Length: 140
Image (cartoon, rainbow, N blue to C red; front, side, top):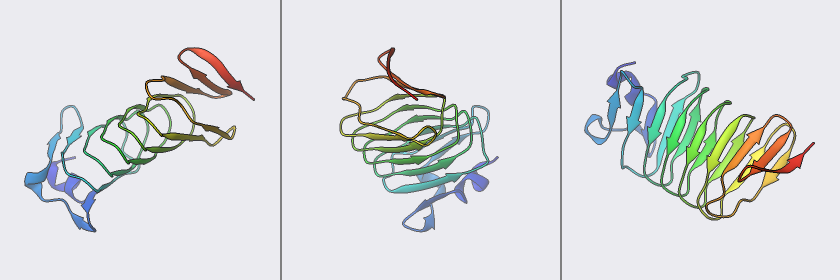
């Protein structure tokens, strides 16, 4: 994917993000921008890395990595890694590692679990439940 193709997948206030407002590394498949309020639709695109500011929404494929500001929403496929700011919402499947900021909520879809970690907790979402800081917390 080249930068022009990426631009069509990244909206800010309903319009494609200006080319000079983000970087795209084709080799590492890394998107980076300090812009706020982005909607990134990389559905069906796997193995990407995202570095963004605040108030962003992500729709992605598998095996993605996120390093974001606060107030972000993620709706992704499995096997992703997150390091985020505060007040984020995660709607996820299984096989994730999350290091969320304060006041984040994780909704595991199958089995249904609502996880409210403390700031700094490392959450491993597994197929049958989840671990908090390496210790079993829930199992269904």
